[in-house]
Amino acid sequence: MITGTGVSGGIGIGRIRIVKEQKIVYERRRIRDTEKEIQRLRSAVGSFVKVTEELAEKLESEAGQKEAEIIRGHILIMKDPVLTDEIEKLIKGGECAESAVEQICNMFISVFSAREDELTKQRASDLEDLKIRMIKHLIGLDETVLSSLPPDTIICAKELTPSMTAGMDKKNVVGFITEKGGETSHCAIIARALEIPAVLGANGIMQLAKNGQTAVLDGISGKIVLSPDGDTLFEYEEKKKRFDEKAELLKNYRGKPTEDSDGRQYSILCNVGNSQDVDKVISGDGEGIGLFRTEFMFMDRKAPPSEEEQFEVYRAAALKMQGRPVVIRTLDIGGDKDVPYLEIKEEDNPFLGVRAVRYCMKHPEILKEQLRAILRASAYGDVKILVPMIADLSELMFVKKMTAEAEKELEAEGIDFCRNIDIGVMIETPSACVIADLLARESDFFSIGTNDLIQYTMAADRGNSDVSYLYSVFKPSVLRSVMHIIRAAKRAGIPVEMCGEAAANRLMTPLLLSFGLDKFSVSPSSVLSIRKEISSYTKDQADKIREAVMEMTASEEIITYLKSELDKYADD
Ligand code: PEP
Ligand code: MG
Image (spheres, rainbow, N blue to C red):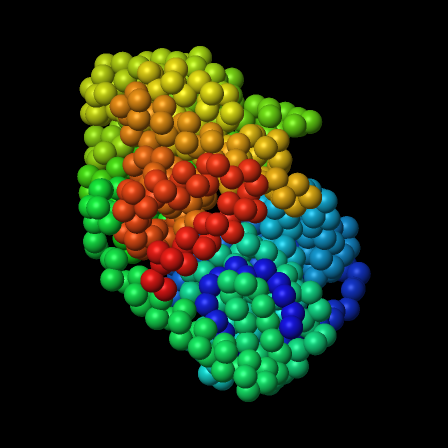
């Protein structure tokens, strides 16, 4: 058995199809007529853009707009003068177009690969994909090798690029296995959107697997079995049946109110990163938007989006939610989210540096523009403001002051907006947790950001696997913090939601119910499973579980106990 990272749930049973990179061979020529060579490059770019747009449209209809944007990103890169000017410069110096593309792309790839953060590394792998595709266009190689596949195919590759998945005959694909890639790679995102089970990071699979070989894969545990024997095959067929039945069962929770066994009401909102995700809130049956991560709108471009552009995006979200809540978080950049044109200084400790509200306080013009856009959108729905990374009351007061100023401006300009917009605080630093009572006096609601709360409470970088043993919401200190925050909100009479990943963790559900959480904000694909989970507990049952857990001293013990309780209450 081989194990990788399960990134897209479900069981795949089928036959392996090995996908190898096409060998690309070209003759490196010296060019005399460089003008003609530049024309050849430009015409290849033209055909590249045309094919890429077709691939994006195909992917959009199969997986969704967000997934298609990944492919469209190739067009943006290929049209970027930073890249094309450099390529043309080399051609003018006598390089042939293929070699110029290869050299310049390689230069950017080595710069990006050397960086630590996942997003920049992902950009390197996008450029690798783009480089090979561009050279294929220059030498006239066919790109669409996977457009026709036999039924029950498991695609096995070193790495699956967005362009490979875009052109693929996906109705016949029952699984993806790759050697490279992880949870946040584009392949993972596309696999989840297509609901195809996927195991990535399966080292050595390309040497072990053979074309036509029967295989099974588990997209949750990350297990892969090649040439399974009869018993194993039967075991996986049963697992697949159970998984599919469970998915079917969850559909019963669609359109139902979110309530526990006693009939207490809760809300399940969704986390979104862009306007395309907003459609998934509706298809996932979310009850509104609990976290709009606006920083993604600021990334992969050269200047901040204007007030008008932001307003259009926020208004569209508000209109689509039809009166249900839309919580828009102000810019949360810095930390691992670098936006080059915003010129955030290199810092020794970016997670402890000028991040989120701290950046906004240094650049009030950017914050003001965003607040104006949010306020204007508030005329179209139940829009709220959420401020990230608050560590001190003064930061919240600053944002409130800026909001009041923005309101005054809009008033003077005769622009419509909602008076008394709710302003909430993300509780994600230990300081905010400790002064939750003080913050509650000045906030309309809290939203607990466990992703950061864990890293700052445990002093363990959320992206560093060497300290991942400390990074757990089940550490007693983190659980106590969460309980403290919720209780502080209750005492102050303000609603409290959780938008960190822990809100979608079923083991956490009874604890959150017992602590008194009002709203869960999760990814659209988790709405139904958390609604079902909430429905399985009475308040008494949840309280008993909480009492037992809060006496325990080790996260391992807590997890084992919660798993055994989950087995008791879950009917799947
Ligand atoms: C969090 O920290 O829990 C959170 C939701 O914010 P982000 O993951 O965007 O930092
Ligand atoms: Mg956070």
